[in-house]
Image 1 (tube, rainbow, N blue to C red):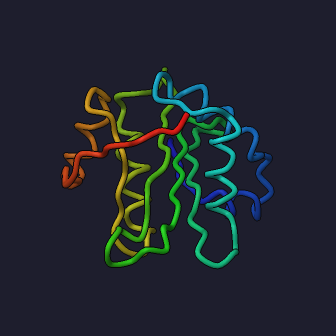
Image 2: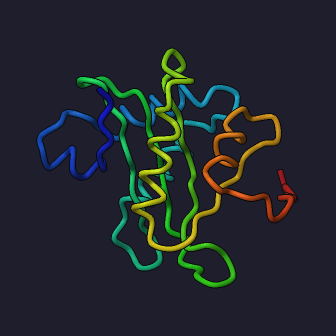
Amino acid sequence: MIEIKDYNELKNEGAEISLDDIVTFLHDHLDRFRDSKPDIRKALDYALSDAEGMGGFILIAREEKDIVGALVMNETGMSGYIPENILVYVAVDASRRGKGIGGKIVREALERAKGDVKLHVEHDNPAKRLYERLGFTSKYAEMRYSKR
């Protein structure tokens, strides 16, 4: 049976899950949509920060003691003109995809989030269909200018 819990809840219960474990899980299971491990770690640190204008949460889906899914939600601090939350990362163990774990963890995150939620998803990402089924709509095309 899959259980979904907040990272802080798991730590308070004595679970032996480190932030490095979550970074590695996300890096391994985001596949071609992954960011670097240091960038993933920044998002986790942001979610767990108590600093003004920061915060969020990390959800972990587990079967027994194995991580089978993870989600990172960051608060934007920009209520009104930008949704209050951004779903930064969600990944499901590649061997367990298609079994409803992704939908379950995203629904749990939407319930826990205070305010609206946005996310960025590439057009060819198979998870895009899940997000649409859950009620996400495409409002804008994201454009970026990179100085690199």
